[in-house]
Image 1 (tube, helix red, strand yellow):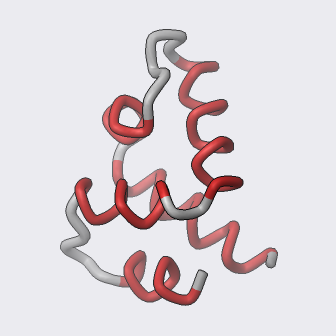
Image 2 (cartoon, one colour):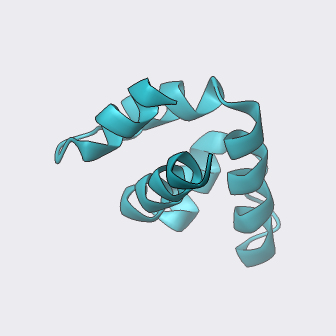
Amino acid sequence: MTKLHHACQKINLTPHELHRLIHADNDLHNKIISISKEITPAATSLTKAIIVLGANTIKNMALETVATT
């Protein structure tokens, strides 16, 4: 989770970098997919979830997850 925390601190974190880091964390990955499906049932992949929720929202969710673990 430290890599994820440090990466989310970056201002210019690309969606690709975000995808790679989140994909490595199964719990966070599933949480993001679940939330995005509530908004848009078609958001069944992490890539679509990042598009639906937006990179900043995803980064905030990741930081929140890091803070609670």
